[in-house]
Length: 358
Ligand code: ASP
Image (cartoon, rainbow, N blue to C red; front, side, top):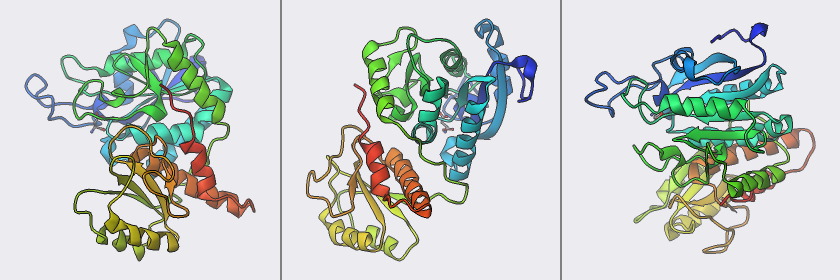
């Protein structure tokens, strides 16, 4: 194991980037209570040393610690650093693939971020970037991190049944596109992939694989990675019983650039929001409707006609739609700076219209 990125005797190698999370967590009393622990305690080099004897023959690893945090504290600046590191490392001819160890709380956001900013690049190079994490801390008696990490290393380094380059995830013996990660359970071992279209890592499901190829065929251009201070400000508002107009009105005088509306059912929202949301549009605030149900899709003009400029999120959940809107606002701004008259809606439509893997 090495953290020396220039170590040529290691080449070619898989780069393992450590971000923290439960996979690097420690519980003070692992025999008694696994719910009380601190995420981000163990270095990525130690996580790799722990599985050294099981690493596939001939696979060389180089590790780099980018952060060691509880991912609920993930910042946009850190996403910028991660995206830039992934992109620069993919370009390196010695790097055959990249593994990222990450906390599961916000792995959903990082998954879509990497797909939208590095997916096409990884695909063109035929290299795999694989995110993984764990639900049990590193010192739990049956810790799931080591097997998840080994699966990720295999997935990033070995030829896998026709599987192209791109941005993937492994967890609980399954693999999915990282943009399909969604933690929908607080404690279940397979929480980040529960309900996500996925395949067993050991036996690739052909219909999943053709879904991956269909998405990759449509994703023809990566979005720029916002610089540390360039991320647009986007908030998520949830519609609910007794929703108040003030929830929207309070943003009208702010510098917020966009609002994600996590609506009920098919992405509808309380009538009390109608007038203030129209005002928000006239204040130049970007609006995207999604559903708080956690599954299914939100379509344009359903359940009611959308106000001009408000977009439906397709199958994007609220956290994913938020990252997608931030990247779309940033992409439109950068396009405008070089004289291309594209709107955030032009960019967002490319994401919302990606095919759904079944
Ligand atoms: N709170 C932890 C984190 O996201 C949860 C985990 O990794 O499973 O960092």
